[in-house]
Image 1 (spheres, helix red, strand yellow):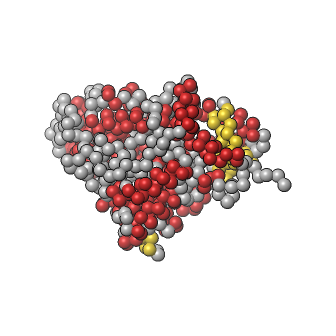
Image 2 (image 1 turned 30 degrees about the vertical axis):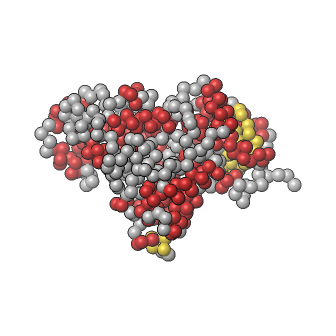
Length: 494
């Protein structure tokens, strides 16, 4: 009896639920390191390291079961296998189209549903039906019901679905860090050393700094990172999840987005571990609900809408934003920036390819929205420079949520704010050369002035939106709005 077709795994399909499920455990595993795929697009050096480290660690873990092939292209690597392979659905439309071409050529025997998300694409299609609006809150509640997470029978525990209002604490005063236990950190090994050597030899213009590796790339590492988070950091995650502290980039965040997106940690495993902490009385419900909302709600929602909205999604440009990304933004040059919050966020991307969701949305995204940066270029920027950035991750997050370029398909209003929000939720403004209370003058905060200039530019659209019409009314009462507009039209430094 012939052995079953081997399983080909991509670099974001590295977990045991991919290669050691009941359906796949008896198959050999093919891992192809494609030089052309790795070097095709400029990206963060640490992201490339994580991908290669994860693939090579999996090959070592599987031993004789794994065939590790280094080739110029995937097609060349598959030709060396000598027989058709089975593959799970890839995580991008481009890769899916490529795999289907390989199937037409006889190199791929079967394409099976991906097991790296809780909800299958077929089940989402059933849920979405003919809907034109896809409220995340409705999707999230259905996820909780479907997978019986934080439920008491048919009702949510405590009788409340959403505890967001309890998770909006400002940074603690007179402290530079939260003072919580350190997250789990990986220990680099000989595989990481080999990856670094190989990346050094590649003729690719990587962005950002090299190492050390900060994120889990194996199932065992991901389990350790998750256990440490749930046991020592989850309790304080919720209250401060929207706060930013310059000297504490991790705060109480889980740092699990990389292992999630490499496929070495399953979202249901993390959600159930967090739920157990609540059931055991070691983490408050608000923190646990906030974490579950991120991974079983928003992350799954973003994944499924990437497929559901299709290729046409990013062909709109509702706010007519077309300003090219400035050089210092593209090169992650934090020293070219004066505003403390923006400089710190850029430095975080440069140094580690990661900042948490508030610097992404309310500092980097807010800046880009106010300045009218091209939303497609910005989406590519986030995809390339973030270690957890993939083609499926960023369209809804950046093009839709952050830049409102879809005209409201994802978010009911543009996510922009002045310096007052940044002053309230971060510790950046004290000592900054710009004053968050000032909108005119040399020390006028570019976020404060930028907010009013943005509101004026889009006043007709914003006045029709019940969530933003108040901002237009406030703008119309400003006696210096003409001066603000002129100032921001000529601003060249931030």
